[in-house]
Image 1 (tube, rainbow, N blue to C red):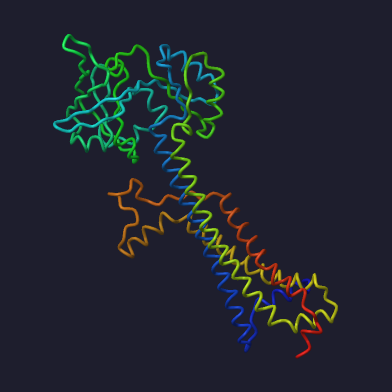
Image 2: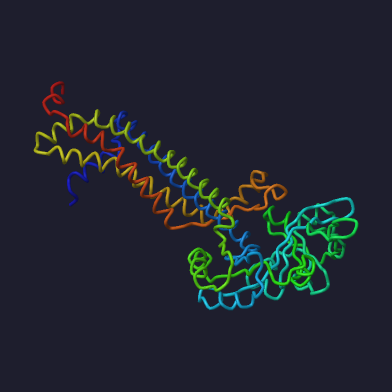
Length: 415
């Protein structure tokens, strides 16, 4: 046998036949339950999609950027020693040198400023995933002394060049002549085109061979060494460790520092969306208050009878807390089930909706990410469920407190 508070609380959640007032109260409770379920499901799906976008953008950024960069001040003369010392750390899995500079690329009458990165093609794939984003050509086509260049898709499109065409690189490091300082100019042949899906890289990055970059910018060493870790989230801690162990004058920056503003903006957007959607759940939860107040008013005679039979105020309070909390529990469970199911299948559901309605939510010609990625995290689901349950419980306290304070004599006076 269940405790009588639980039995009565469960009974009050159902309307009796022929009782129009009870049916109306139950209808309000049902709408509150549906509102909680909808808000919880929407919150889980939105958080999962934002997690998916964050993960997708992070992966695209790290396909070009490295987990940690050891930057020389101003250059690393003996980068092999630095790389060897870094690889002694068990978290560091690969190292690759690079030369960084700026240049103006020219093709015909079109000019475009870019960041030029000199790389070692044989090592680059160990620290970045640019090779998997090649649309034309290959990084292996960069040969020392061949003066080949790999362009971002937006740069190639702006210059109007394809693989096999020639571009002219103009560097800010000038050559002093009797006629004055002249810019350094060198012709490069386009050997590949990559597309990361991030405008920052596709429109402003060009890759050349490390030896060619050293000749172009007339440097003996390299600008720095890029490191790849076994866990990208360990980058800040590993960078601090390397700063203590590396025996060289260099600056260490991990990926969270290099793109701090971007990831901070994404995190702020996620928090704002969480707050907005939590308010939707709160509105639905506090609809329980109106349903509970009406129920307490309707059940005053029942409350008075229970009190005269020996029920304590605490028992009356428990009855109505159980009745209201049950609405929140059922609504939350339905919302969690629906939200998890939709979040796990959003990449299938959204295309089906687009085909049915004949619309495109993320046009490929406008957005670099044309699909809705989803990354369902257990912590988000638990947090949303707990918040919904707490809000529903809080919404039952005031009506239940009023019920516990009902005076039996006053309630039965006109019965």
